Image 1 (cartoon, rainbow over the protein chains, first blue to last red):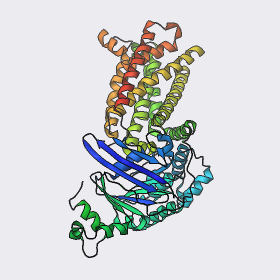
Image 2: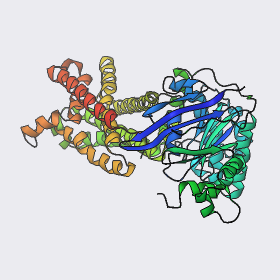
Image 3: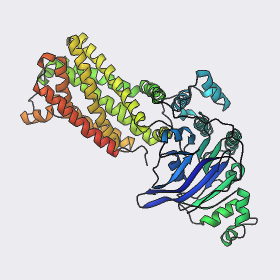
Image 4: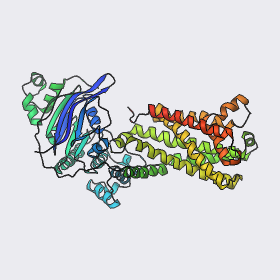
Length: 255
Length: 268
């Protein structure tokens, strides 16, 4: 039996009187890709931010490989790699310097040739002396993913990793995400794309109003909810994951 | 309570996780290297923080009007004060506000680097920039204006510069804490020059009356000018200079308190 890469128990996060995360519990297994789906404002990013240590939870516990995030924040952060929803780096730094900075922050000394090697692996070897802002959207996402995994963390957190990418760049990034999993790491990602959830996630949770509504494999979710009247009401033909999502979270627009 | 627990994809992990949080020395080395690089590539801030005080130094010694403002040491101290104010506002507060807006801090905060190391590294780089500016200015004052200092006075002045930099950097921190937007901070920072620096120029002059002289002398800029002119001429160090040390400390504590209390790492 393998252990859990991440254990979240009864997590609550509030912004003043507003409760953004309301009693979320989830376990992510070693080597698993877990997707968190939900409309805007559902609490996905707040859940991730609490795990990353950017937000202080009101209550609940977060264990990363049995390390308590609140008791040992430095060690817990060394065990995770993070790609934020919108990432930016110091505009004066070249991308090879950015890689060197973040490797250094994890205590991973990288030589010039090692940095060049890592950049070449993601087809950015020729761009090593350019600035982050000079890269295309796809290149920026690849660099962000490289930096998130520069220290070979056992758990990688990706907040909408493919948003804003064209189909080619998106497919490439899915391959890289699959490659991360192949090396034995676990991934928790948030996404609005049902296609992405079905293509890369082993398990998916649908979240709304700060709570997890349901969780299973993508196929399991369809099977579990295909006869739900709310799902059938929105289905156009065969029930899809998107039908399940809309059926459970409603049709109204979220800002 | 919603719960997830059933595994469906179990694989054998092949990754060896880091067994320790990185040491503070490793974190500081990485941060300082990056922050120094950023500082050296920030051409606009570099130019302003070195050129502005040199231009003022020239202006204060070029005509007879400069004589009315105070003795030569006071005028050199005024140029030093302008340099410190420029570095603290343009080099520190502006960069902090810009990086916060772009999400640079949030990216750094998800690493094992404790938050205080992120700010301390930036502050150390600014103190180094202030020291470099002070050395250039003191050499220029000696070569071109004939204001030469003894070795003791040089040392005391540089210690005074480090001490005074705390005041201006804490003002920069307070500005970055109170003003969220980088654009607004740019505008507010320019206005802040007036009470921070310009008012202090008249700390040894009664051109605008004795009441204004008193306000000027104990404004942030005037306090630092009194302190530094005392350091440049150790034989003239008196109770006013000691009072300037005390007032400067009080300003630093108050502004740092405001800056820390209201500072936000993210733009939202």
